[in-house]
Amino acid sequence: MAPQSLACFTFDNMAEAADVGAGKLRDPLDGPLHASLEVGFPRIYQLLERYGIRATCFVEGWNGEHHPAEVAEIPRRGHELGMHGWVHEEWHQLDPARESELARQATLALERAAGVRPRGFRAPGGQRSPQTAQILRELGYRYDASLGAGMQPAVLAPGLAQVPFVWPAVDGFHYLRPQPVPAATVRDGWLRTLDKVATHGGLFLLICHAFITGVVDERMGALEAVIRAAASDQRVRIVSAGEVAEEVIGKS
Image (cartoon, rainbow, N blue to C red; front, top):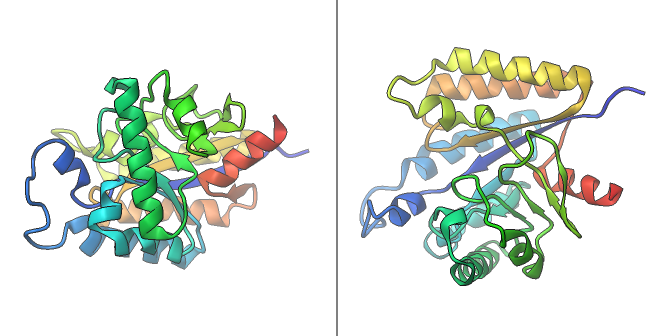
C-alpha cells in the first residue's frame, strides 16, 4: 500500500491585529486599507481558486469586530476559519485566566462575523501554554495547529488533535530577516520537502501570510509553484487542517 501523503496550505494573521497587539498602532482604522486586505488576501484567494484548493486561515479574533466582512469572506469562499488569538498575543506567556478569557472572546467574535464557529486554533508565536488544550476542549475546538513534534499529527487530548508545523515551513522564517532569503531558494526547499512527503508519506504543511507573501510577486510565484506541484502530484492529497485533525481523531 502506498504511504498516505497529505499537503495542507494555511495562512496566518489578518490586517492590523498584530500591530495593535504590539502597541504599534492606536487608531488602526483611520487610514488606508491594510495591504493584507487590499492586496494580499485577494491574490491568495485567486491563487487557491485557480487550483481548487481549500485552505485554512487562522486570524485574530479582533478582526471579527473590526473587519467582519473580511472574516466572513473566508468561509464564504469555502476555506476553513481558525482562531489565532485576540491581537496576536504571546500565547504561552498568558496566565490561565487571561488565556481563557481571550480564547473565548476571540472565538465568539469570529463566530459572530463569519456565521461559523472556528474549530481550529494556532497559537500566536507558535507555542501553546500548558492549559491551552483544556481551554480549547471547553470551547469545542477539534485541533491545535501550534508547534509540536516535528510535522507529525497526533492526539493532543481526548477529542483534540494536534496538526503541527515546523519553522522552515513558515514564509516569515525565511523572508523576515535583515537579508531575506530569495524566493526561488525558499521555493526549492519547499519543493524538496513536498517530494519527500510524497515519496515516504506524512504531512506537508505550509504557513504563509498575506502581508509577507501575498504582497510580493516573487513570493507569490514561489507559493504557486509549490501549490501547482502538490495539485499535480497523484501521490499527494490536499486537505485542510481540519480534515487532517478529523482523520487523526478518527483513528484514535
